Amino acid sequence: MKKGIKVSLIVVTVVLVLVGLLGLGVYGLARKINKERSCDWGNIDNIEMYADINIPKVAGSNCVYIKEEHVKITCFDLDTSRVDVERYLKGNPLTPFSSRDSLEFDARLVERSHLLEWVDAGHAFYKKGENDGASYQVLLNSKTGLLCVMLAYKVW
Image (tube, rainbow, N blue to C red; front, top):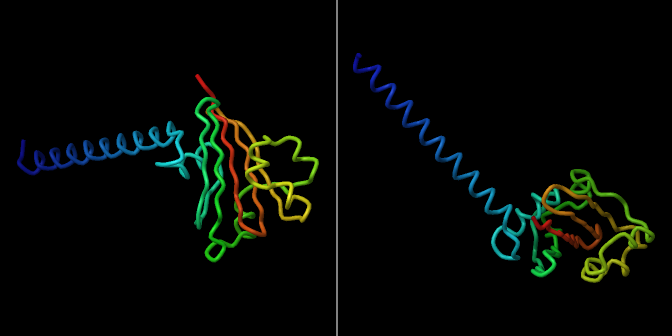
């Protein structure tokens, strides 16, 4: 074989190996985030994966993981100086909240979000659902930028 063809084959092989290794690395990172249950490493990414919602810039957060129940509740204070909450609502499928909806939410989430204090002011939005790995409930106070998420992980 000619020298040029050999060099080309070596370059293509090296590039394919590097792309494969990069792909495996990204896949491994995604799996690690997906399996993470704590409130520390990968918390926002884990919530985004399970609740299918974007968490924008935050000023602070408060999180608790109840290991025995496989439940994580996190409340984020959105950085309202950098996040337009009205625009955020347009990009995320959240439903306007009525007081009767509060009966369908986990009491721990209602308590941590102080939902009953602001639900009737017209600033409350929610999303809830379930996927292969968890059920989720999301509450947003559009006036204050408080975004609370509860994930109840499924145990296999």
